[in-house]
Each structure stands twice: as structure tokens, then as C-alpha cells.
Image (cartoon, rainbow, N blue to C red; front, side, top):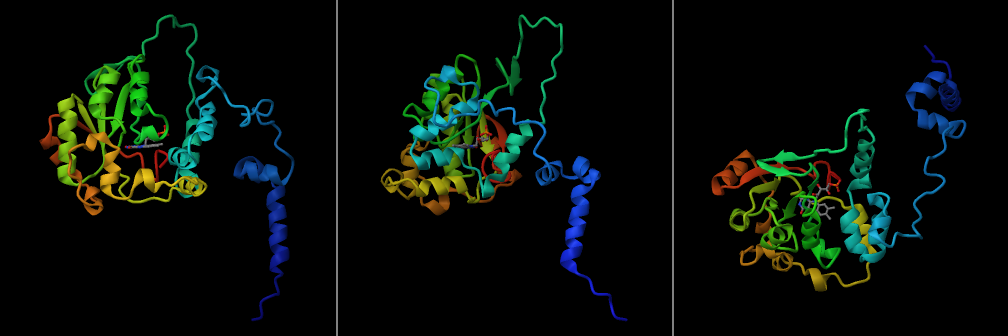
Length: 302
Ligand SMILES: Cc1cc2nc3c(=O)[nH]c(=O)nc-3n(C[C@H](O)[C@H](O)[C@H](O)COP(=O)(O)O)c2cc1C
């Protein structure tokens, strides 16, 4: 039997016209798409009257209205590659965007007519009491952003009695961080070769760090797009500071002082299993916590 001739283009167009006009599609299906097709959005962008002005940066931290006011200042002051290292996500920055949007799902529910003259945010985390549940996540290489690096972070954490987690890749040693924080600091580490891990942990334990935080992902290399794009614009000679060998890497990371890191192939190990966690528990008296900030790329960012 011969099939009737179908003009595919005309059919597609009338189908799309039908969809675009459909009230069901506008209200339920994909409102943003539908709005773009027809009228402009009914509600103006609430920031329209005073958007963040990238030519007019804050000159004092006290002027910041929110944390994002700091970012353009960092962009202005840091070498492009260092700024890129800090802000990058991976693969089209999908997760960074998803994280930002994720926060919109949280609402603060006010409870009225309660006496909030004295509020108590005290939290106990693995046996220690902190003034609030605000914890400083580990970030390596802080001296790439400011000469005081992680020491400045420790000093900032001190008045609010915040828990600080020091990255093993910090540019400050665990001893210095604990002294500056005036209280025990947790110690983060990646999956390193076993002897390196042991040496790092023993040092952290001797320094008085009560908890080892094992980052259980991040072993694979990822596509740090913003980092690479900005690094390409950086005209400085990066190798003169960073070098290329594991020895160059650890030379600026004092937690590794005196530890034989061998060659690059043996510094990081790709495989960790629950047995690795058990081995860590048997190795030191510290409590062991695990985190996976790189779950879908880099940083819960990832
Ligand atoms: C510059 C930078 C360095 C980081 N270094 C580490 C690190 O050494 N170890 C680690 O476990 N996580 C590291 N992270 C991940 C952070 O601890 C944190 O999970 C991530 O930034 C997500 O939190 P945010 O959404 O507040 O940025 C780093 C993140 C950034 C931005």
C-alpha cells in the first residue's frame, strides 16, 4: 500500500505552534521556554535596579553585602591562573550551577514571637563542642590567594570557634594551623601511597589533630574548564613556581616535610576501598571521617 505523502517540515511547524499556544505547556511543561516564545517575563529581575557592578568593587570587607561581593575583588587581585583554580568547576560548570540553584530549595522558616534575645547554635561534632555548625572545608594552596594563607583562615576561625579542616595540601603545617586556631584542627588527606599517608597521619596526630578527614574521591583528573581557560590568559611563567615533579609539589606544602614522596606515579593511588579506611583506623588513634567533595567533578562544585 502506498503511504500518503507527509510534509515533515510543515507538520513539525504546526505541532510546535500547537505546543507553544497550549496553556498546559505554558503553565506546567516548561514555563521559561514558553515565556521566551511569547511575552517577556511578567516579573522583573529583582536585582534589576542595583545589579552587582563589576567596575565598582568593595574596598573594605565591611562593605560586602554577601560573600559574592568578594569574588570580583579576588578576580582583580589574583593572577588569572590562581583565580581560575579557586573558582573552577568542571565540564560546563554544571555542578557549580546546580549547587547554586540547590540553595534556592532551602527556606528559613521563621517562628514568630519567640524570645531570640539569646540564641544558642552550639553544636557537638565528633565529641567536640563548637559555637555553631559552620565548618571551614579544607582547601589547599591558600598562599596562592594571600601570603597569610591558611594561617589567616585559622585566625578567622578562632573568634567564632569554628571547626577548621586543614588540607594536607595546605601551605601551612598542621602545627602552625593548630597554634593559630588556638584549638585542635582536623586534618584532610587524599589517597596517597601508603607510607606517605601513614607519615602524614602520624604527624597530624602528634600535632594534636583529633580527626582525619579522608577525601575518598578526586583521584581521577577532571576537566577544570574555567581554570584552563584563565590559565591560558596568564602570561607568567608558572613552572618557575610550580615545577613539575612531586618534589616540587610537596616543597610548598610543609605537611610533607621530611616525607619521601617518591615519583609521581607512586604519590597518588587510584584505588581506595573500605579496607583502606579500616587500615587507617588501625594505624592511628584519630577518628576517621570521609568526604567526597568531587562527587560529580570538582568541589561540591563536583
Ligand atoms: C581552591 C580549592 C581548593 C580545594 N582543596 C581541597 C582539598 O585540598 N581537599 C579537599 O578535600 N577538598 C578541597 N576542596 C573542596 C572544598 O573543600 C569544598 O568541598 C568545595 O569547595 C565545596 O564547597 P563550596 O561549595 O563552599 O565551595 C577545594 C576547593 C577549592 C575551591
